[in-house]
Image 1 (cartoon, rainbow, N blue to C red):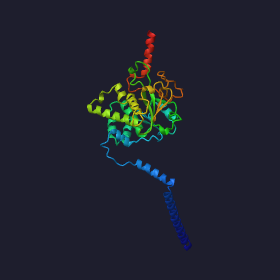
Image 2: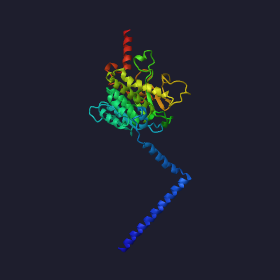
Image 3: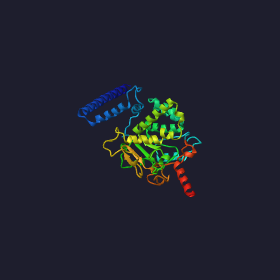
Image 4: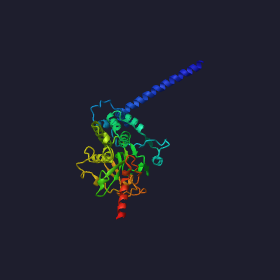
Length: 366
């Protein structure tokens, strides 16, 4: 028994000595590193500084504009990675028996293994926005005030990309190629924050009868990093306009092209163009002039403007057989859109195809 007690005591003494020596040695090394300016010292400081940025001080934002609130809630870090998220919205999810877009939804999962892929229903969307935009309540108020499902769907895509980043694509789209191919390989991804495509490039005298803008950027497929200024601006515009219409009691009168102007591709295109000409983000004084539709018409390859990649019409609208769009097997074809346009009356769906059919019929009659 005595030997056992002595052994335990000896072991305790040895462990104590070892612990004290180890602490002394570690403290000495740290002190030497601090005195010599060792790079090892800078690593903990960098990590601590990042944590300090993440842990923002509590602020009274009641006096701040919507734009400033959004800036504070979700700052833009261009050097971050594109988040591996795919966001889509629909009335039901793939788990429901009546889900009607299984092939389309599966194409995104197939082309993007390892990505988080979510099909968000209306109820889930509200819960997500209440969580992500609790500090910007007017945004949630505007979303809930919108009278049409398409308006809410438009606003949600901007909101989810602004808060979480990744890819948004309409539920009736097929992923032809992985998003990893969307940004040209020679362009560093840490210099790009937004990837968009051309929806329409109508080179015809009556283009205004069918499209809202001479060059129209599509918003059925967008890739973005969180906090991008274009998303911040478009969210602010929609929120301000919606709440102003609500105050005047005019929200219920929104129909037809009002949708395109309030939340759709017209507003989206205007916001992108304004960003590309904004002196806060670009050296406008030394540029060759204002950026407008002339810079993008007839594109066959991607074009970089600052931190934005603009893809040609073939990328998100292949196979439409007009406006220079090439077929689905073209190397620049990335997404196929079925153009369901479920929010539009039947007479307004497939506008481009309808126009072509009318022209053919007129030609046959003549």
